[in-house]
Image 1 (tube, one colour):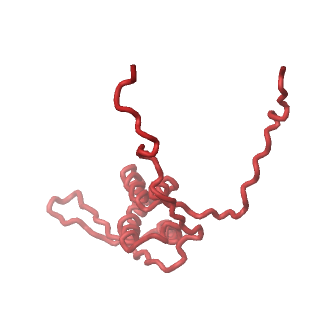
Image 2: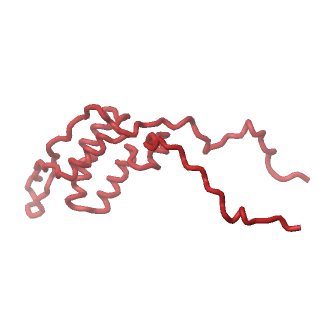
Image 3: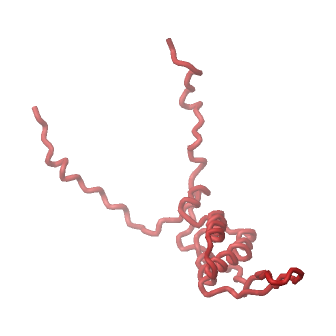
Length: 160
């Protein structure tokens, strides 16, 4: 008696959910070499006065730290920046940079998780780039060294 359920499909009719949808697009290893929008001088931060009930919140401009400026320059020169449209540049400048700067000044798990999420959307890690079918070009031009034969195999002998 045959098993339960429908008969298996022919191999060419099977649909693999994990099949590659196409080749990986290669990003240049040297990164973005063109011009990029400058980081603004600072960002707006609203401070609420907890003492007075009727008082208006105070808004001030916070200048970016040197670490945030260096972080932005790293992103601007990264291989992912070669694919940035004006939308991604604006997200980096006006959404993610203030998050990063705020996190450096007052670290919190809430800011860390939001920062991680926002950077993921731009391809911050190797896994993020794989999900987007992107890869950074290999900077090593040397061919991989051939594997050495295992010493253990050379000592094996047939037993009769």
